[in-house]
Length: 352
Image 1 (cartoon, rainbow, N blue to C red):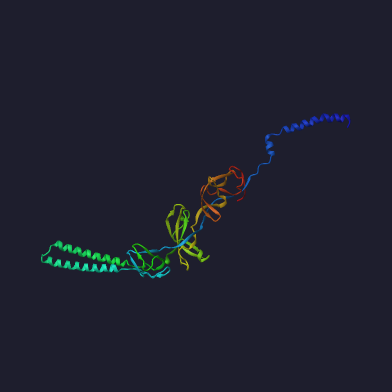
Image 2: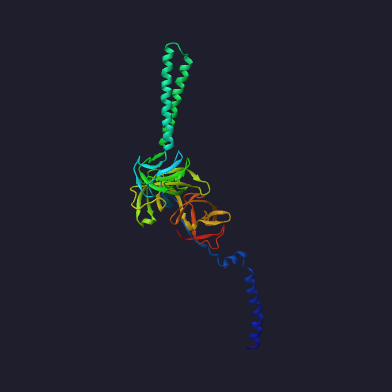
């Protein structure tokens, strides 16, 4: 390079550097921020909630039991002289179940008959004497009272004798036999148990949230595990008015129509109940979150940011859950994309 060119280059190099440095110094802070890549929005899936009128089917466990079950007690003491029935035996209404030894009562009844006859004779004699003014009216009144007492004593003994023969109050089947012939039983001892097989019902426990949507006569179905997978038609027979304090559940009785062969009290059942359609706010079950503060959901606000909302849940319907408080129709609930989500974070909905 010639001396003249070297001199020109040495003079121009500082000028070029000065221009470059001056251009860099003109960049503003806003231009520097714009040059950086914008943060990405949090990707989520969301659902716009709306009321849905849906009938809800619930399966509840329960047991079969006899609605009409009588425990047979004796009202008179004595030795058992007749008891020919065993568990499973069927009886007709009025059939003799148990007989007690009544010989002592028979003797007392015979004595009461004699006392009654004597009282009748005494009254008749005094009435004849009164007609001749041989006795006073007060003596005749005492004789009438003695006659009434004698009749009452006889009636009492005959009633006690009837208690020594215990008859079936209705047609049914013997479910328990607790004594044997020859046993001496004191008063008010349970001897047998008698059940009406046509009164067999299913008893199931239902949540306090379900009970308001059930009514007597509603259709239902039952599966009795001991009888296989077949389902049997049933209907709501009775809804008990009180709840169990600890579980907040009430008893619902279901009548089988007809009662299937092989059904027995004590068998395990699975009852399927269907409530009437009611408008409910339902969200996917995985959209309902829980922590130490309680139940909550993540919503998308009008600015496209995540916000947390406390809610109160209700019934579960398959893979959805009812929200009873905390949500309004039209709000958008986040259903997926919770990892790293926080309040105020911008979100981008990838699927609705």
